[in-house]
Length: 436
Image 1 (cartoon, rainbow, N blue to C red):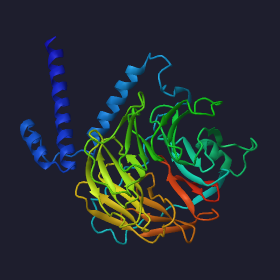
Image 2 (cartoon, helix red, strand yellow):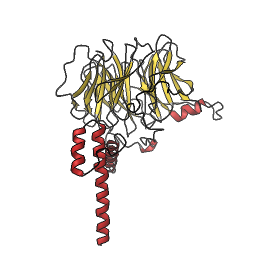
Image 3 (tube, helix red, strand yellow):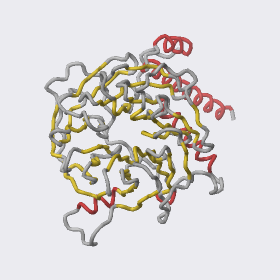
């Protein structure tokens, strides 16, 4: 019995040591040096202990997800979201490689990587401009939204089957669902992180919820009526909340179970041209970022909804059209109608890199990372090309004809593999994947 107690004590001591190491490393990685020193001193933990960036946050997020899963077991199907087990949805594959550490390499000139050759295929056409696209977190689905008010859902495995040179099973139809329930153009889409639910934000001031596990469902099963044009939507990683970026300068935070709307208690002074073009949560939900028509990129605390940093004039007087976090949440990639793509360090507010050589002044253009964050992709409107930069060196490494008639309106990369979607003013949707 004493032996068992001793073993338990040793195990608990080892667990405490690991936890202390993660706390110290987490504080240090987020530039909270004084707090890191205090914890290190109090727990006799080395200050320079090594741990992957955000490892503590990842473990907490996984633990909360397991706790939530256990809580939801046995809950009747009348609840808002089921777990999507019928489609095996939400089981995210491991990433191909770790994300790039942009602060690790100082002199990177001459070390640019080559972006692999891709093949592309026309997937489908909407009846009007294809305006936006979004991949599911597990990379198994992609949805597109159009000015014709429709949403198309594609299954990636069927797209790949369609692209095979000699499919013996006859024509493959990659569109598995089409939803019609808006009365104005679709602006943005997002997938619930665990359940088979797709949301859309549109010019008709609504956010609509679609259950794509049901083959016959054409219309939304829940609707949020906002007061403004819903320009962008983003689910919290827990799936319990969502953000709506609208013509209002402050993002609207909704509880997805009660539809209660919350606004920042202490909003900054934002001028009349502060409409939000895009809002995106970080990977843990600890922060979110907005890109606004006034050219600013703003960072917000994910809990208090207070603005913690503003990159005023990030894109001059031109609109900031997109913004997203790196996986380690230390940097933000932004794009604007000043034809610049920029990488910002969150901790210092410093402009780290600029990706130049693509002109985008007309559309609400995106700049996105590939799945490994080794490359940045955007659009050159005059030449109708997709432009790719090495993310570390900021060197332009490829320019490819988009194969759209007219410049693409949107580009979105898969979170799990070397594949992306482009949407065009020519109403078409194209899929791109690495040549193997």
